[in-house]
Image (cartoon, helix red, strand yellow):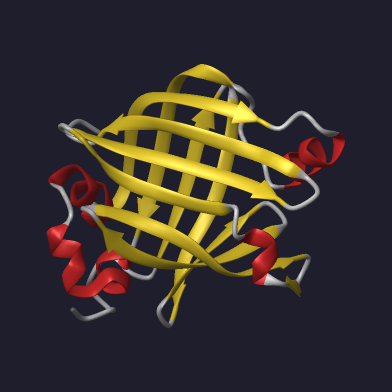
Length: 179
């Protein structure tokens, strides 16, 4: 695929992208501004450090309820805004070589993506905060999984850090058939 005309995730995953279930492919091939709705369940850490890190990275509040995700996608970058519990969680995604980068608040994450059992698995390979790179081993508890639940796009995102503990764990689904 040509990186100049292909969707971001299709370029990063190469031929494995075609093996993904239709709801996952549908979310990632759409270009331009799209809006998806669904439901989410969010668990948050309760410690002081956990709350501080969650605040500076705009993590969602704990709870169960509706979810709206706006994705503005072009072949070289995507802007996601997740509306959860009355709050917006914006991020920007782009590619650097074979790494998917995501800027979330003051943090920039680099992820290696791979397809495992018909799902996209995100694994941290680098993290920068305020422009300073941190040891990736601190972030082995950060990752995500995208899959299908029937006709729905499903996700499972978790973040925990040594000493700090659980930051956030959220799971849910989006209807990608109707924008």
